Length: 311
Image (cartoon, rainbow, N blue to C red; front, side, top):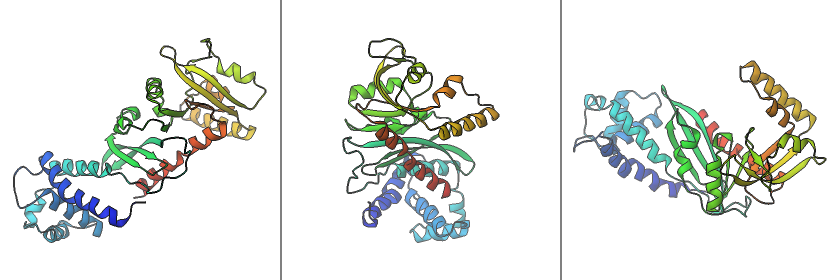
């Protein structure tokens, strides 16, 4: 994992060279003055880290320690909307830094990386934003971006990050996109998702597949079925499913009942399919146990969100 020794130059670069560059790019610093982007960033970040309730006078003391010669009134005048833009952009630059493990972990070694993507709403002061995260499980790569709260999950910047050929992507239904799945198939990338109810399915001969009827006819509790997905530009994939226990099915029924109570109706088809756990994937010969293990690995990204909420 990344050591303190390795992290120090990253932080130094962020709070000096990057801060000065971003200050000019955002217009926070327009010409040479007593205050610098690096000085302002260091005095506020380190000042508030040292004392979360620091006053302007205490921040001024921190500014003096950075080497800036500025009055308390001069520093006070720099707390403007432009300063907010500058600091926000500096946060985005910080989020571009990638931390990774030195030793790859044996997480499904047949893939050239296992990538999880998810989003969560976060609040900075009075501003609500979207935190978009992509976590690679084998080496611990972490990529984070801040987006406008109204940005759709599929349009977040992390989705534009390229993955190596042979990698596997895992996302929830917010990232279910047949056009992207087809593109990934063509690029040699693998993907795994829960099945979005209502998705058009076809068998290998091109005939419409009624999944509910097909499942009801099965004597086995598990299924791995090659299919074509999508009404127009069809995508080659596999349906991997397992029948759930009566206890799990009852739990799901209670969840649907609660959703209806909250004015979120559930379709009859979704209720019927709840007797199964169903995944859609491009990975051939994937067993249900493997698919379920991979899908459940998404809890790792929830730890990132919980840490962000706690902090």
